[in-house]
Image 1: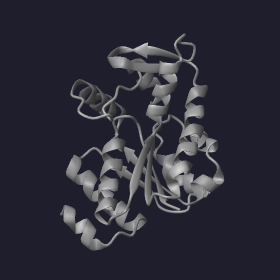
Image 2: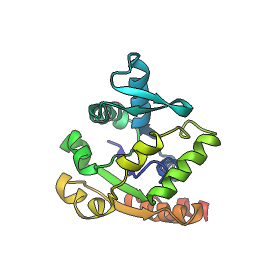
Image 3: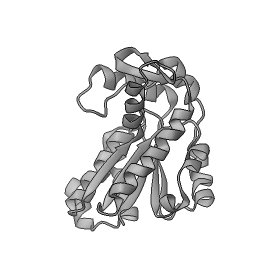
Image 4: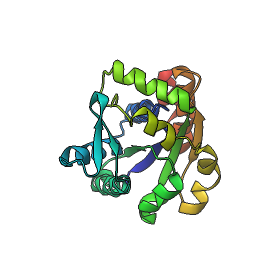
Length: 214
């Protein structure tokens, strides 16, 4: 059974960058890895919703969810897809953003969470929104996708989930490994150092692998 790492935080908090760097470090130790992002599942659902009953299109080929139950369905599908490959993959990073992680994690099975680790990347609301705008205007990878419209973004992600992640997540859902919060307001180098410590504590990679990035 492979290691599962949930990478959480608002859009623009650095989840995709963080997950990519974690997989890079693992691959230096010859670990196989895979990444899942619920955005791509929601995008598939949006494209299938040709009558716009559950979604509505926004600028830059983005979308807003009209029926918020689709967010729960996406998490259930996310678990299903991860389970299909986790037995044959050393590391799976799982990325998604929600306004209420307490409610979100109820849609995963206890067995799915038991051997998982959690990394929460914190950045304030205005910084996250600015980063989303920048990545859409200068997109260079599949991760540089639009988020919700600005109005929906500000209302949906107004609540700061940091305290919940720190205080309740491990106790409520039996997360079996590391639960870590990193502040991602100080640039890429600072983030990478925090990720290296997280990986060292969570994946127990050899120090010689981590030194490759020094």
